Image (cartoon, rainbow, N blue to C red; front, side, top):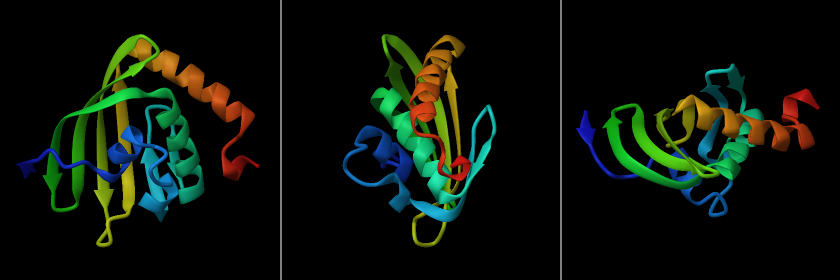
Length: 131
């Protein structure tokens, strides 16, 4: 394992969401783990991750640990005026698409604000599999 400042695919998207489509970064059968539930499939995960990117501001990479199968990124961001820190763990396939990801954010107060904003966004446009 080595430390490097290169960005993971999803962190790159979080920092520049308009630069690419998040769906282009994901494998068709991706699994996204969150503290609430697991999401499966490119459409649902892309939709959810777009909502996350819409809520997080000033995303900064503090450290990235590269492994043979992916990258673990320690990051900081803002949700409204609250500082938040997190860990994004990604596993990628041979062509660089994310096949599995886990995002953990803290502190709880900022996470509650973020989830509230995301629920509002998603209630106006529900996940594709719920349509």
